[in-house]
Length: 422
Image (cartoon, rainbow, N blue to C red):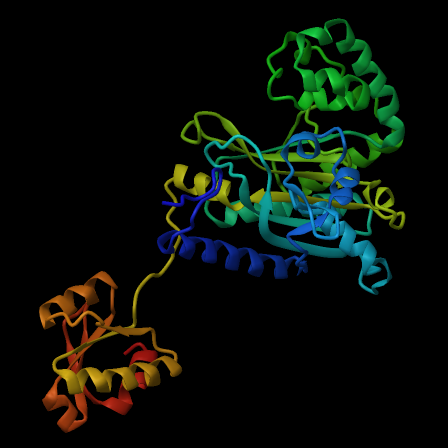
């Protein structure tokens, strides 16, 4: 027997209905904020992620699915969405569009070769937002408000928004050196990745999951002490907007994002619930990037965005006991008695479906009792039973399965009766 690849999952019909509900709700919410959908290829040039995500990141060094095509070109299944969206922005010259900033969202599968654990897969579905073309604290606040709005719209309440400023490029030069000075005397006690990061990107040591309990982590220099006046003013303005919007937040000076292109505002949304894996767990993260476009040979433009995992959203809803209002029922089930009735039901099914009725029939030659049990399993709102008498009279009793009441209708009246919800 051939089994599913490790780290992937089948989303079966009973679950896919929940996915459709979530995705539909997200699409509707994006229109309220004037974000438009973008769809990029599932694979891109490997160089895009090496440059855009960062050579020193775990994503690039350890987790990418990379392969050569028949033209000996190195391609990679996308591990995240931002780099691909920015590539498309540059390639399609979106900076020339009349409506600025360009506000985009995406939704689709991403791929990372990492250890499988609850809520984390090697193929996972990521929904993300990017607002490119404006460096304005108000749009940072808008993106943060959107993050909160998404999760609150599904009924989640135990949410904790954590924010930080990681400053502009100028602020980070001095801070990076302060981190090197702090960690170098003890770096031999840290993991191999951190020992590399001390020279390439020491800020990412603060994001290490292996060494997060090392004592030096608690005493590391804070980026807020190294922000220049411009970065301080920007961060204060972002916080002021959040205060006006009555969005609660916590400032964590040690919060850094795992990708190299972030500057200024960085944030994570956490689930603060003992029922959710027993701890505060990150649901979503993002931040501002003020050098990514130039890094990818694009214009001097800035952006801000975030990404969330649909799988982790579903886990959060499960932990909170929130049931999505997903409807999995039929409008009508047709039961038949006899070959002539079954033949007629085939055409009637087709006519009703073209009229917008959710309808099905028996295909296993069950007896009438078995057909009615099938109608119950399918949660049919109405049922009809067609036999020789119904065919002769060209009318049938339509039974409401909830009330038990029936109404006799001509066959051609059934569609109108069902669609009106009589």
